[in-house]
Each structure stands twice: as C-alpha cells, then as structure tokens.
Figure 1 (tube, one colour):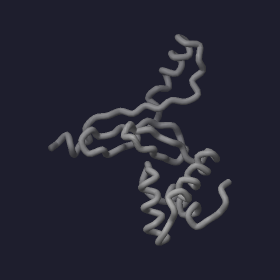
Figure 2 (cartoon, helix red, strand yellow):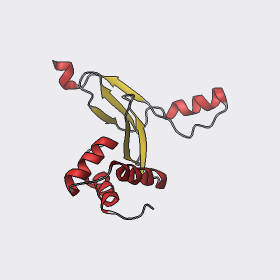
Figure 3 (cartoon, one colour):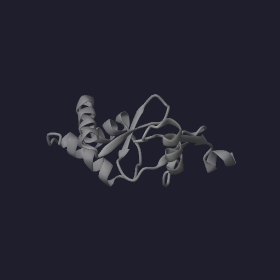
Length: 127
C-alpha cells in the first residue's frame, strides 16, 4: 500500500466517493489541487500507480492519447461519443462468449480484454 499522504488519501477518496466513472491523471490532479490547494503532479501519479499496483484501480485506454483509470469492479466495456467525447459504461461483458471462441481457435486462455465502442450519444444524435 502506498505511504499515506494527503494527496494519496484524496486520490483514494475521489475514486471511492465521486460519481465520476473514469479519471485521467490531469482530472485527478485538478481535483486534488481544488481540494487541497496544492499538489505535485508526480505525487498524484505515484498515488495512482500505487493503487493500480494494489489492484484497486485499472487503466483504461479510450484511444484519445490519455490514460484513464477506474475502480476495479465487475468487468464491463465502454462506449465513447464520436462528437462530444462522452464515455459511458456498457453494463456486463459483451465478449463472454468470444473468449471461448478465441481459446478454441488459438489455444490461448484469455485473461483480459478491452473493448471500446464508439458512436453518437443520444444528445449528439438528436442534433
């Protein structure tokens, strides 16, 4: 576990209590600075790296060049709006059956995967 500090404590609190699903490092840094008045970016990075190493959070690639993190909970996929960039969790795993097919065709045992859908959110689709 990471050494306790006001910054790492605040990062943990943000993941545990906020309604925000995904966090980039920049968003976490801004939220910590807003809460504590100051925070070094590298300290936020170390807090996130420690939580990822502990298995509390996981890294998510949304294809936007930024690293995002979310609490490690039940596996699920994501969908991102091509217009506004909004990201929403897709409940459950839509690839459960595909893992068996991958194993059958390659011999690999699937240990993880990441799938990102893209499309238009209801607001952008209505515009």
